[in-house]
Image (spheres, rainbow over the protein chains, first blue to last red):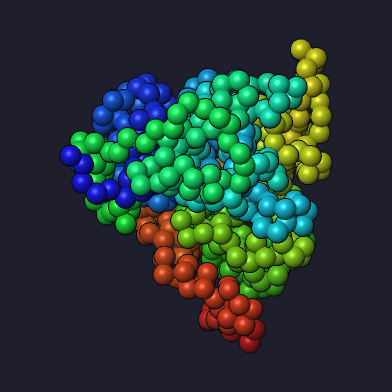
Length: 254
Length: 280
């Protein structure tokens, strides 16, 4: 049996399961969730996983406890570290990196992310922080999108500004991808993926205690129809034990 | 000429002209050159274009909050886990602050080009699928690949008039050693016309010789060194101190209202005894 777990813990476990052995994962600002996921994956089904933490450029850092800071000195004990410009080179090269963890103030039905401006760019209703490395999303093999807010404000039909490219909205759109684009979206309510033909987002699973109607209510667009929606498998006892060992400060369990 | 040791205000007066393109190093809430940025604000120096590393926090937010920035070129201004940068956000939303939109990759390549005397570089894939080049025509232009004939975007080379950095150590000849995470600070140093570096401490040249290539910036590139222990606070400097989260939260709270922000800024600019000495 599995004891109680937090939504963040469930999200970390879902992301961890998405990482495959041997892959290279890149994450950016506020890395606690993808960092927990990568470390968990590496200690379970993906021992050969590599993960790069944002600005620090560290590869496979093992901080004592999770950190919310991508340039934290706690990341320094890492077996390898790239100067940031070299992380940028590899992001452009693309073939060295497999999974880009991304998010946005707005995320749309095709997985485009917007961290720049809600409303008109020149006179925004909400100015976001900026997009940092998200333009590289289509250069890597695929991306995993995570959001701490699942609401119609965040999940919109079309982002106001594309700062992290997702799937093309129509087959006519001339987009050359090296990778597969976004493969999974993880939110506090559900997991979503993309219809292989239309590339439109669809509901894959609802988290325990969440209904499909609640997810529909919280999503600002009509998701594509898909296979029957399942319940997100909760963390196993082993996953939860390992995760909490990685997170002694309880960043995710709070 | 090797760098000279100056006080922060002296270095700003001599090397940071009003209206210039000024680059500030450090990434997120780590290694922000706050001693130098605070001296700029204290001296009331206006920045024509403020260029930041791929992710800035208080080193961008402070001069913006003081109303001293005309235009900002930054892939990110914010406080990571502590949220958005309130005055940056407000200034852009109200139209007081112009944004030259750029992303991490394009900025890095622009600095690399600037450092190497390369007029522009072809952009790697990705940014072409965003709206960024469309809103930043001064930085991005269409080019044809002379080898394949394919069209794509080019990013203009970037040479800041002045770069302000925080480093760990300097020796007597103005050679400086960067800290544990170099971020894009080296490129910002190499691309700059002038470079002012604040350091945590001074060391003998002998100590510098033990450093690996790539860890140091030679004194001949350094216009001035400012010795400022704790000078990145409230941001962190790895190996020396963590960020002062309480002080950052105090700022974020003060920035919510104009009156409390004014008081916070007055406290910052008035609390320095060096200013009193300079004025007398």
